[in-house]
Amino acid sequence: MPTALLSSKGRITIPSAVRRSLGLNPGDVIEFTDTGNGRFVLSIQTGHSNELKGLVRRKQLPVSVEEMNAAIVDAAKARNDRT
Image (cartoon, rainbow, N blue to C red; front, top):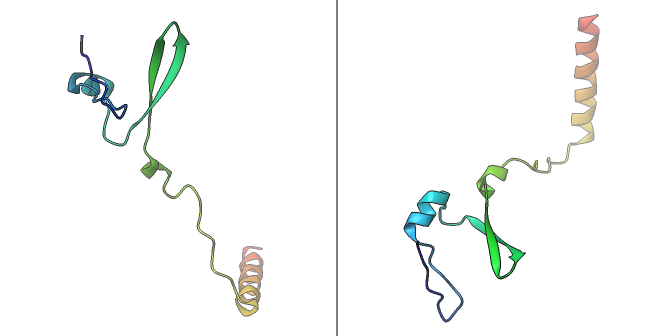
């Protein structure tokens, strides 16, 4: 059974066999859930923050009144061309 030593700063190194078995990589987040009787369950947070890229759109640059008017004219022409 793999074991780990607790450092004076409260840190442990997870044995490589355990990391491989769990598919852990640097930067992964591990959640500890107390199940009582001095036992904890480790849960690995799946996914990386890189996967969130593009989820929130950037604010668009302000548009001038002239650009808005031109877009309205273009949309009206396109609508009339379809009918």
